[in-house]
Amino acid sequence: MNLLNLFSKRKSAPVARERLQILLAHERTIAGGSDLVAVLREEILAVLKKHVSVDSDKVQVKMERGKAVSTLAVDIEIPTPTEPLSKLERPKVAAAAAAAG
Amino acid sequence: MAKVLVVTSGKGGVGKTTSTAAIGAALAKDGKNVVVVDFDVGLRNLDLVMGAERRVVYDLINVVQGDAKLPQALIRDKRVDTLCLLPASQTRDKDALTEEGVSQVMNELREKFDWVICDSPAGIERGATLAMRHADVAIVVTNPEVSSVRDSDRIIGLLDAKTARAEKGERIDKHLLLTRYDPARAERGEMLKTEDVLEILSIPLLGIIPESEEVLKASNLGSPVTISNPLSGPARAYADAAKRLSGETVLLTIPTDRRSLLGRLFMRRAA
Ligand SMILES: Nc1ncnc2c1ncn2[C@@H]1O[C@H](COP(=O)(O)OP(=O)(O)OP(=O)(O)O)[C@@H](O)[C@H]1O
Ligand SMILES: [Mg+2]
Image (cartoon, rainbow over all chains, first blue to last red; front, side, top):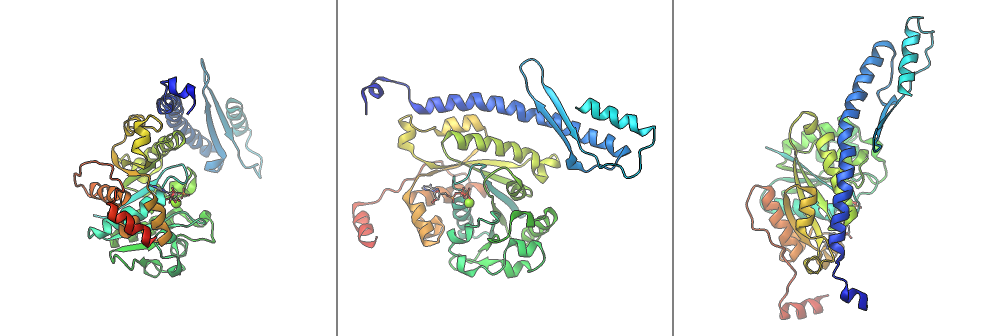
């Protein structure tokens, strides 16, 4: 045992405890937000399915937490339509994709 | 009514397989009908820890895919006849497990046994979520160490979100099993204390398993520690944990491997 250890009162376990408490408080808020992400994902899917056939795992919703604002990233992959979308539908999908990006 | 119990942790190597075997054997010795199911597809180990590695003919994937009937794949323990093992496949990968297939096997097991204990693979991916999917009760195995506690926190989140019960809005019983605990080091402030881990994870404590050389000895012999050396510290701690699972109230202690001098001399000659 070196001299420093003899004098330092700080044990390592309390440090571990403190680090964990801070870290997990942060990680839980991220995980807590995933509920919202899941709900959004389901609803976006439902809307999409009205217009195009889309695979459920081709819709990805991600939440990035920032200090003041958080950003929501929505990534949707749809099959390239074999027959062109009707003129009426096209702008809608484009709008959704733009909003998503 | 049958209960499905998942033994999970997130972090690897913390003692899930050891705990599955020890608690499974303890419940079976108490007269319950128990099956331990290895979900660690591709890296099966429960068969080794149970000493049944040479008796594996069919496995969980064979049953899920309909290549074998459940009774053909179940291996009955030679020491405790109310204990069975359903091994994992060593050659296939986890993608061979389908959600419906697993669900069907779980239903069939529920009819035959009082306890269905699922040994989860490490990680938070598909293998781990499949293992916890049908659980009514979960044991979160945690070592008193930062990365294990963090991973346990993740797993607790998954248990509350990804299990069939959670999706139905029902509760899943979660218990903390603190393993490889060294009371002396915790006392000296070198290791997280039980209270620290409990406060951080805030789920009820099922038991504290001491760090002990008896665990390695038991796995060398291919016998759950609750069978090979029931008087050892970890075996008594596991037996108490099993009683608590069955609803008994047992005073919480951290049993140690203290031996008499005579016992120690004898052990040395035997070793
Ligand atoms: N209480 C204990 N005292 C001493 N050694 C232990 C104890 N519990 C487990 N071990 C040892 O730790 C190692 C890992 O244990 P085990 O295989 O049960 O962990 P696991 O969580 O199932 O691992 P994996 O994530 O790889 O499946 C083994 O060598 C085992 O003997
Ligand atoms: Mg294991």
